[in-house]
Length: 583
Image (cartoon, rainbow, N blue to C red; front, side, top):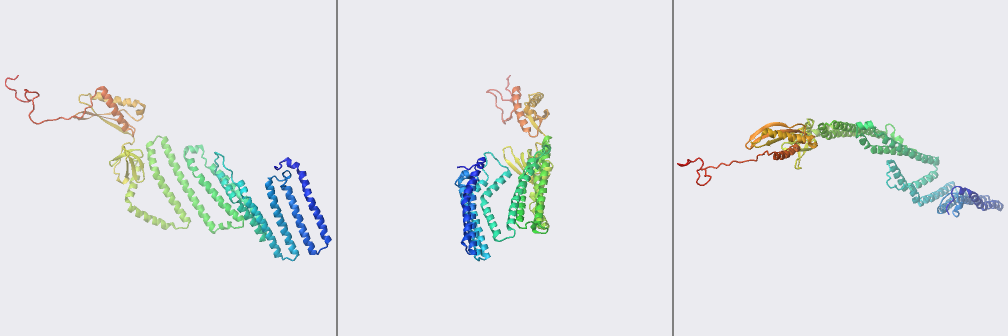
């Protein structure tokens, strides 16, 4: 039957008390008879004291068992005071009987031994052995209920789609760990209780109880501080709308350090908690950090290194934020050329800044560890000098590249010609240029080999056309037709954005054997000259075909040596003297 709950249990309280009275009646009757019979037998004083001790022990056992039967009532669930299952009630009753019998009987035996002249040392040994057996029984109970208690302590499975935050994950990990080791902690605590009593430590139980309470209090405070500090860190890294507008990527960069800071705060709290617990349990851990002690020196070094690392991160992020803000401003102001140049220099500047910061942090760390950095600096200077002599080509590449970049000779995306190699600049490193040719070939050219730079897409470009027509064509008419084609292209949306100005007529540039060559040019956006040139050639061919304008093909004139042959039989050869009488 299920145990009673709520008011139903209160309504059965008279029945429970009535059954308790019935259980106590035989015990009371036995007490009256036994306490009256022992003096009536008139035994020896020692025998009478032993009989009274045994009688007291028996009555005490019966009273405790009656009280346990009232609370758990293993055979009658409807009379059970404490709500629990039938199996649990029977289990508790069995172990309660064992503990009571061993405890009361052992105490009675020890008292009876004193009456028979047992030494006090043996008396104490009996009591220690009794309490050790009790501790072993309690340890067995702990082991028998290890799985059941662990299932209660262990964190429940997550619901579908539930993603706990860092604090909940830490709490779940702690609960899972506690479920695995709680029985070991409980057994150790039982042994500690027995050891305090067996060794007769002065105020041992009070100190153990105080340490236990303080341990729970320290753990609770540490957990609360951890949650509060994590929330404070998460809130402090929220960027206002105004600051986010001025530094768009600032919040994203700052959030990268939130997990690291949270982990650092948790680590510091963990160390402080461990030290506090050691102090609570009598280990003078705080004395390790007294002035002049090793802990104090270590703490000073850690604080100095941490402060240096924080300054380094602050400088790094401030520089990155300033660079990004400058790039965003250039993009808003449509200064594409300057933006591309800055983007080209940014990787080199960031690498240099990172190396300087890392060297600063490394030397500071070595100084805190007690290493003299002066010889290291001198050695680094000698090594740098040797590397400079041994890698002159590399140094030349780097220096030439820096000057080319600062002179803004080229940027990523420009079309350049470098010593016979041409293509689009894909990458500018600290020592080389990467070009992508029109056929997809990649040219990697060291800066030291660059003697001249031909930038074909700086600021603007000209699409230059040499149009050849036959000698019989009117060149003015051809020029008007070409200008009309340029105006047509500028009126279209696709080409109007890339052609900056009207066609510029340079005039008849050459009189070749096949016909005059008219040179014109069109001002375009930097990278669009070839597209405009191809489109213009296509339209010229179509318009010339429609207008009947001849584009002369290449011709050859053949000259034969020897006497000329007559064009037909009987005719005189060209240049020959006609016969007499010929017309």
